Image (cartoon, rainbow, N blue to C red; front, side, top):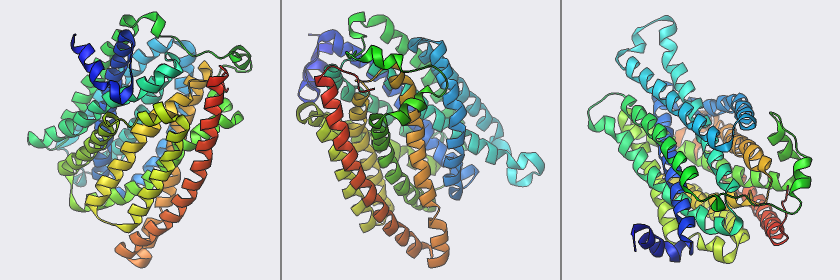
Length: 462
């Protein structure tokens, strides 16, 4: 037995039994996802700290709103490129372009590290503001579109039974990038005595460029028999009703209850975690600053991915594989309901650290792979175009709703004081979250039944 066979034997109780080439396919996909997760979590946690430093903590809700508007032209360009290039070539283009942009930001932060902006007048004084917002917007676009493109490709080359065991394995391997990337890379400038995080960005740029090699390896080394799509008996008819164009994905989304349902279960956890996030970042910014704040957020990012990895290695995917997709979907709102209760019961940075980490981890470990399986009984346009709209605007629209709710925190603190205002905001959040959890359960039940029926009847839902 070689290393691959030993590894396959060890993970069998947690993910199920694979054929040898099938297992190697998911290892390759997991490697790509590890680089995506590692790069995104590294620049994502770095983005938060840099934005707080360059612009300020109170501007984060407004930055999320601004990013949402910039996603419209981003998704239009994304859709145009999908109509022009194959899925393989588009992966190359998107990864190469993202690596180049990160390199440019690294150069900007390295060049401006010696300028004391408080001592200059005119346009130069606004550079931190523009750089902070620009980097925030780019990270939002990269994280959403890169992961959406990867999972659209994964859904397009995987059959339902294989996805049940393979998708959780991809997510588990991907967490390794999220574990080592944010903390190790973002803590490096502090360890070397540097005053900015430009070095971290240079490293991430190299990581993204290296991902091109892994993408090529997936498409050239995997047998063609394992790179096939799910096809339903009614797929030709469904595709004839679909069109090309910038807004086809959006048109599909608003026409089908199934896609609106998927959007909902993407949106609901994001709204709740966005509300949690503001309280967490606010308390963290009171205790840390500069590169120490970057390192703290990096440690939090690593903790999320460590927990996600442990959940998956602990066999959480067996819930979906044995009990069914519907059970996994319904279990998520129940867990988040418990998290809301904990949020209003305790108020400390340490507790919020672990509450945030565990909430995100269970979402990535259980809800994430389940959602990706929901796309399999759909057409090519839904997997690539509608999914991009759903996960981009669903996720960011949810964060916008959370951000709008978080704007109440400032007025409440001005009226009631910092501590009482935060407590009142938490109470209001619990009422809001309770309504979300109730609706979430109903939507999850609908999606589970619809997916099961489509697979049993060998049809596409839309």
